[in-house]
Length: 359
Image (cartoon, rainbow, N blue to C red):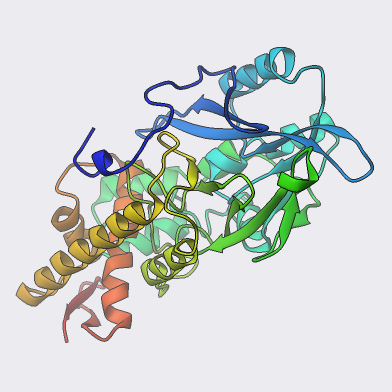
């Protein structure tokens, strides 16, 4: 546990559910943990005991895991052993990234239920699932061209990026043709007790187009998705669909939406362990980005820098091509934050690469 983690409280200690099992974390709320084949090797999913309008009882699933046979197998074990003989009555997805939405089509079809998402992330998933590579960090011609503009020009990386054009569709091969929209400030009823079933939608930006977190005031529980994580900072990137985007500023502004919540709210994140001390963690995340912005600005004072140049400034480690796309996207997000503030000037060199220098 690092020094920052010592400032947080982990009410369940090191206890975590094995894949295919559930662990109760709040009244009617259960924690699932599924593996991922990435450096970030797991995702937390949530089961909430539910009763829909009309009295139909069962379970709401919150987030789904990627599409592969291993994750499907863990879900089959859950269906057989952990649902107490009740069906799934709803699938709710916090945002469009593959580890969250990948199996939504399979789950919704299996149980004949509706998918609930925000408009921004539902449409983003449809675009990224189209197979064109547009809008995704994963790869394809659009991503390769985008990262080349920002300094990732070596032929090997460019070839690997182009070869990954089916990356998102392979993890999210389909999406339900219909969905139920969630919007900022509305209350979604999830639960069997009317007094404790109200979950307020809090939308966040920067990590994805319209990320949904859910706060239950009665039980003091926040399902934070990827917006507030305990151990790592949320990836905030600029990708090819919105090439002049200011995603880092959007993310920092979105953190303010959680400040009215109590410090001791139980936070159920998509990665890591459930924790408390929300305000402490918000301050840590802000300070992290203040430091990275300062490093970025200093580098651009010394010489004009591309996003590829900034990767080694703020990360200081080597990446495979998968991780490099996120590192490049996040480096560009820091550059754009300073650029939009007027602290940097953006210029295109004779080699076609965009670089930033201090204003």
